[in-house]
Each structure stands twice: as C-alpha cells, then as structure tokens.
Length: 119
Image (tube, rainbow, N blue to C red; front, side):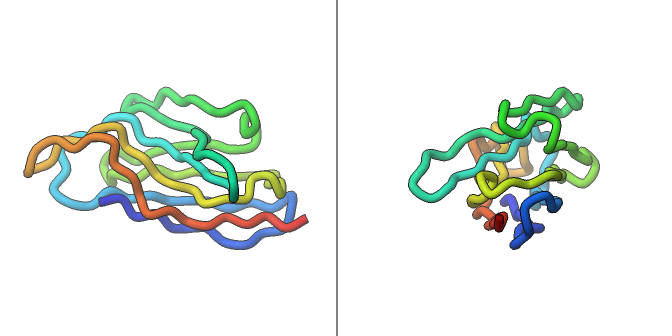
C-alpha cells in the first residue's frame, strides 16, 4: 500500500513537499515516482527515481521540483518549489514493482493527494 501526504493549497511561487510511504512487509522496491492529473487532462509523469538514485523529470518541472527517496523507510519525496497555477492537480505516487512477503506486486498506485496553486 502507498500512502501520500503533504498536499494542500499554496500561492504561486510557494513550495510544498509531498511524501509517499510504502507499507507492509516489503523487501525491495523498484522505480518510485510521482504522477499528476489536472482536471480534464490525462495523468502525466512528473518525476521518478530508481533504487540507485537515478532521477528523471518531466520538462515542465525541471529545475523546480526535486525527487528523493529513503530506501530504508520505503519512502519517496517530492520537493516542489516555485509552484505555478499549472502545477495544480492530484498527485499520485507510483511504484513499478515491489517484492513483498506475499509475492511481487507491479504498477502500484497511491490514492492521490490534491495540490492547488493559486495565482
């Protein structure tokens, strides 16, 4: 299970930090990432990070957002700075695969957290 936290309402230019923790008897986690979905738009990738720390960002957030993870805590973070109204949306945590005491799980999503940036 993935549980996000840290969303909210912020003015343009402000910052927010999202967290996502994977719970359960987890042995390994592959790529962890953040996606977002704005009203009326398709879900899009924001950033992701491998277990080794390699990162990948969508062009609109490069230089403003930073993804990081703590493998020991099975947690991924998204630091969002210089927020813009177009960053508004529901942010979802995603894991491509994880191995657990009950077997492997693939394409795991969190429930989402709302981020609203006012102009």
